[in-house]
Figure 1 (tube, rainbow, N blue to C red):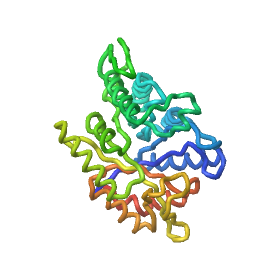
Figure 2: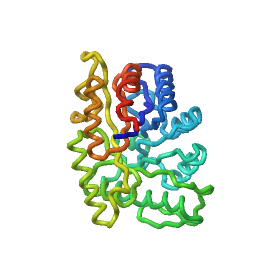
Figure 3: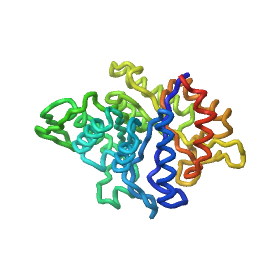
Figure 4: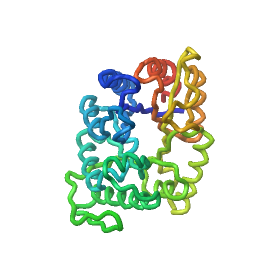
Length: 303
């Protein structure tokens, strides 16, 4: 089965230096250009005291250096920026990339980051209400001129977002909350994303997403299911990471093993209908894993 892949472009060194990170990211972006892979950028501001680059700035810089590469956010925390600003930035990126921008957005979760940067961190139910309103404002600004929206959390009045994107960016909702997040994905998303899940856990979330679609009268086939996965591939078993490293959920699923084993594990997702997988290589900033992936795994999923 044909399957699209994307690569996470890390914003922080992993046991190395900023210079090594930038060099490693250059290799990843070159792979995206050469193999028609998407490039993805995470939205955080701090992890302990490590250097950490801001999402939209790193994305815009990378997109400008690699024309033709499709780029996306994995995913923006909606509480970090007012939705009208997100809509405007996304419309600009859609224009400047020639229609190759994917806006991934979610409710946000990293409380210490919110507190450190001076943003409120309301309860999850409120953050999901905000996400709903944010998406409605973003879509209104992409569609209408002028656009007006009055909600409990966000408002715009006669707002202009010109040039309006044509076509609009793909809107991807991230998260696996079964009651609210998947309902919002059913209502708003072009793509849906969830991270670190095994195929079995992913299948459960996907069934619930489809149930929400059916409840509102939407064809589930109109939402593209995507998955963010950790990857550890090597010919040397001693280099294969089979348990999640620190800072990852202890239950995180890893696409791990030699090339044949990894192909089988990816195949379990394609059998569920997943058509796009974003990858984070656990040997980063080394390039061994990405080289094996490109040479021995990627060809198994060519159209």
